[in-house]
Amino acid sequence: MTHKLTMISAAVALALGASTAHADFDDMVSVRGFGTMGAVHSTEDQADVVGSVFQPDGAGYTRGIDVRGDSRVAGQVSVRFTDKLSLTAQAITQYQYDGKFTPNIEWLNLKYSFTPALSARIGRIALPTFLVSDSRMVGYANTAVRPPEELYKVAPLTNSDGVDLSYSFSSSRLQHSVQTFYGMSKPKIPAGDVDADTIYGANYQVEAGSALLRVAYTHMDVDLELDMIEPMFDGLRQLAGALSSFGFATAGAEASALVEKYKLQDINMSFLSLAGSYDPGAWFVIAEALQFSGDSLLSDARAGYVTAGARFGKLTPYATLAEVDADTKFERGISTTGLPGMFADGAAAVNAGLNMTLNQFQGSQQSVSAGMRWDAMNNIAVKGQYSYVDLGANSAGKLLNPQPGFVPGGSYSVYSLTVDFIF
Image 1 (spheres, helix red, strand yellow):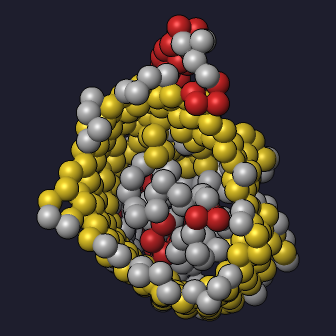
Image 2: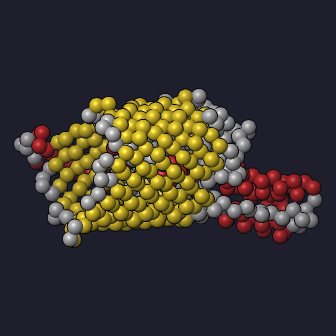
Image 3: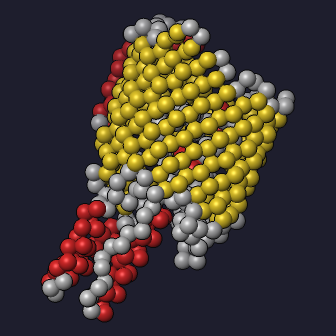
């Protein structure tokens, strides 16, 4: 479907472009861009702080100072064919799953406005799970160095290939907007593939002067292919067969049940988020909360953050409190009672490995951050940020690449410096 939508969008754009060749180019086409140059240092040297879950490594274990995770450059082209029909394309070059700075089509969609208030899009669109989903990669558009990972890494997908419908209206002093969407997404991650073949949801936003309130729901049906997890399932299947063959039917059934319980196919995920902000100009406060429900290795979780800051000319100091709390429960696994030594040791090892995977797959952590934004020029912002991260019990939080020397449940500091720009 991804390729079909891309081809359809391109074909329609070319056809309409040919029919409107007489239009004034400056009125018809706008070109914009944005980017970030960043550097990150982490005091945790046995795991990596990464810019997103789609990156293979970052600051900490792999690099003392990482200049890849937050760095990106993007271009966006908007073509207005008629008063009702337009095309938007956005390409981003950033550090990807394969360790390269590979360009990627982030948006490519056709928009048709039935009325000034009602519009529809088809193609690749931003997945509107959160408050700043449209601008989460545009560093210049955000006060902090990056959206809080406690919330935004719980739902890391940024776009979907499909359709959406948006409607806006006014009542009294309130401005309302409603959006529904349906699509799919198939991004690659360092450890394998993600196939979200069904994504749907809706959101509602209301604004009154300086205040904003937003509620959103997103559902996904996901299949995962993870190279690092498959050996664990292979081991469970082999152990289940061996236990059953030697007459330990109960333990064999328990091993088989674990394979089914934690399988990586047909995983149901849902995200219910609530966000609000108040920004009268001289100061601001933003808060966002998420209730996540998941299957398999993805434990249910609650996440949220509060960011507050004040503006003093070109300087904007800010602070953020953020937390993600995963309902990771201890898995009893395969009972070792009555098993001979070899089988008992194998079952105990599988149980330990499964519990370690559960704690790493959906980690808990809380953080406090403080930073400063300096608007050096009209199109350039320089930011510095310090974050202290406290991991949950037995958790790796949002760290990647934990090494044998990594101790779950610890704490560490992150120092970030970015230069954001638009053009």
